[in-house]
Image 1 (cartoon, chains in turn red, cyan):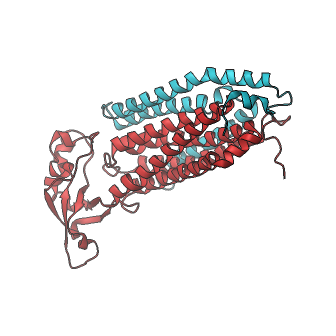
Image 2: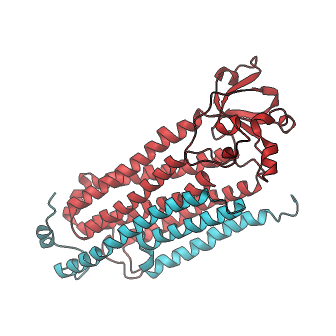
Image 3: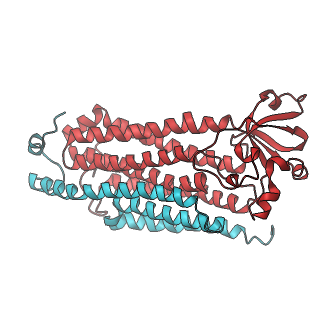
Length: 291
Length: 123
């Protein structure tokens, strides 16, 4: 079956069909991400003081990934422009760089950022035991400065068996800098460059802990929203990469020989999707990494 | 994989009903003019990414103020992507019409969140 209006405008809409199609799809995507973002706003604004963490994500890596996505948006628009100017070789190169950027983005997400979280441990202290762990929390110091209290001790868990063995009554945590030096003004606000966990060990009794675990979606509302939104966004990046790969392979060359404008339109439509994915990330990055 | 312009323009170019070489040359010329703009927008977006990161380490007094500043910058960046990369600065009427509906419903969605804080039963 011949698909109508792939390169010529349909008289009543004034547009070729795929253009209308992709915008309708993007409209539904706006609703999908809109729902998640409104859930994020709701959960964040309703979190009690100290329950919305800051500085747990790797900002330099996040910044790099943002730059990679922006670069890929430029290359995909250049790929389209090259086709419009009938420069097929340039198109192949620009598309190659777009795909490469998408793959790097996903690699960083799946092999660097997420695994870093999966091995990071945190223990949320019960309100009644906060006083006992004051040397690691520094809440008096924070109160003087008018900052939100710290409610958790984070770092690397030494005795991993404590997670499963009920006979072990405490967690041994090699603490992050904020807990190792809680009253150091340096620890008041997150830093751009992430610091490794210190050698200083905290012994946290299980009976004093409200919830403890690795930084998985189950750890906190923050991580639940973080993994949901970045996961869905990552799935979109993967989808875009697959479509670009299809258009980059000989399928694209064959279509180009038959009808170059048709390939240009396909790239434009795939590019619109890609820019949307970039646009979503422009909001995800500050909301989760920086604020 | 032949990419010389000569061979391509001699092929039938099914652009529009009047699809002749002249039309193609005209399109190519228009696109070429825009390329500099695309590069500049890319550069601006990268610069504003750095600005966003920098501003997040500046204390604007309250967290709300910091969020507001960051969202302002993000909205500006998103606007650039939509207007230039997604060609929304110069699009057909139907696309705008679709987007007006989208904006209406997504704002409605956010308004529901807002309503939740005025729930007289829970609060």
